[in-house]
Amino acid sequence: MKSYEKLLLENKAWAAEKKEDDADYFERLAKLQTPEFLWIGCSDSRVPANEITGTQPGEIFVHRNVANLVIHTDVNLLSVLDYAVTHLKVRHIIVCGHYGCGGIKAAMTNHDFKYVLNMWLRNIKDVYRLYSEELEAINDEESRADRLVELNVKEQVIHLAKTSIVQRAWKNDNRPHLHGWVYGLKDGIIKPVFEMTAGTPLDPIYEYDDL
Figure 1 (tube, rainbow, N blue to C red):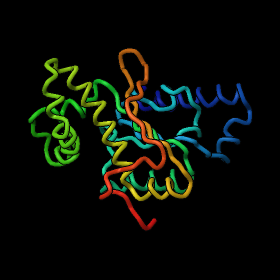
Figure 2: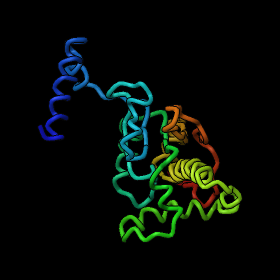
Figure 3: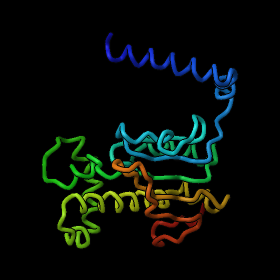
Figure 4: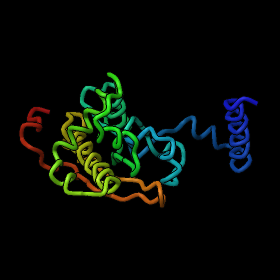
């Protein structure tokens, strides 16, 4: 049996088990999506949003990319953000990184990862530069990487707040609340590291005055 065929078999078994437990499960799910949360996480296969939060399908709207970045030229991210905030009207946005992140570790090196990855990782290097004094005072390499994971999450939350999408919702609906979390691969525990409530002041250059 090919590896991908096993996935299809497991899917059938999972669907059958769901229907056995609740005959109307899929019928209800197909008609309803009212998530309270938007999750912006890392693409790492060890950090599945639903599983580590104990939530069911339909409860979290999810976007994932390498190292959970919020980049203002990323149309994919912005379309997800706009849909979640403007149409689904989520009340919370969570940026969740994780310790041991390969993207973070790669960005801390001077290796050439070729054009596309270099371009992506440059955004993490910018975070490192902002906090270089703090980071370079940490002698242990793993601890330094862990701290960069936390600081990267913080900066991505701030990037969310800089968007007109979030600021408009803050002004009109007093939502969403922004959260920065880090997941521990070694213990499975999520650690909150940063948050911004609706209307949190920014550097004035980033604030829109005609929303």
